[in-house]
Image 1 (tube, helix red, strand yellow):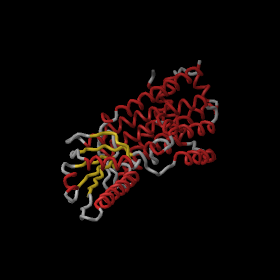
Image 2 (tube, one colour; image 1 turned 120 degrees about the vertical axis):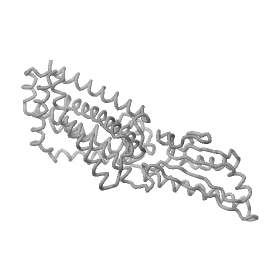
Image 3 (cartoon, rainbow, N blue to C red; image 1 turned 90 degrees about the vertical axis):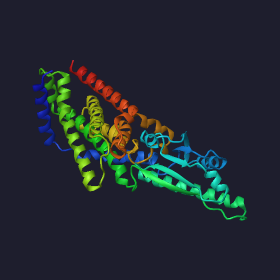
Length: 373
């Protein structure tokens, strides 16, 4: 494989991409797809919040309180944590969205008519969901207080249950902290897939692809030369977004920069491979744009958890989200940027991104090499 040949193709691609703006007429089909996805995927109701409980009291009153949360249908009990558990690690791995901590002596305080202090820990990376969960918890605690007063029949004066909420990772519940990492995944998917697909199809429309095939260029050299410019452009776009997020919105990268770069690189390789695969089955730029938008841009917006909670979608759409790479990339991005976690906290998400990148690149190479034979 010749580096000189790869650089020649990459340099030619950079010059061509600078002189060929995307036609705005191709955007006419996008609103239709948005309408379909909006109708089925958008749901701002938050249900089935993953709840973990650290019950240090183990009394009838504490069990009744936990049952109140679960029976509300807003929360799903996913773990019963022992005393002294690493709660930060538990939420860092996204095993729970909320953790209810019931201290020892809660039942005794309630029986004596004293105030019982509880703690609710929330993952605030998604500000909208966290605000909604806070409202649910307040309503449940208020209902528990009303039930206790009704059971007492007004014979004694009872102190209300008092709980102290703490929001981790996004204490101010700023929506920008939640949206900016997801925006990175959307922009990178859009840039990588569409630009790569259109660049290869453009060669077909101009007839220059046949000229490239009769040269000494190997399929691998052509693929690498075509994708390297857009890999660089996408990485530059990532840096610009992060810089703008830091100075305009105050979003800080709390995790390792090297881990962030590694996850972005794997995600981009898969996106570029998808663009090449689309170019291998498209004969016109219009067809490539429509196909690229269908399989990349729209799912990255609506089916990745970028804006809308996946657990609030219908079961069929929830199943579809498992093949959307932006879903896993958003999890890693928010973990590194907001939670300060490393890639070791997200082995399954990184494994999927790696498998996805290898699979689409292999398919793209097989199709492009076959056409050259």
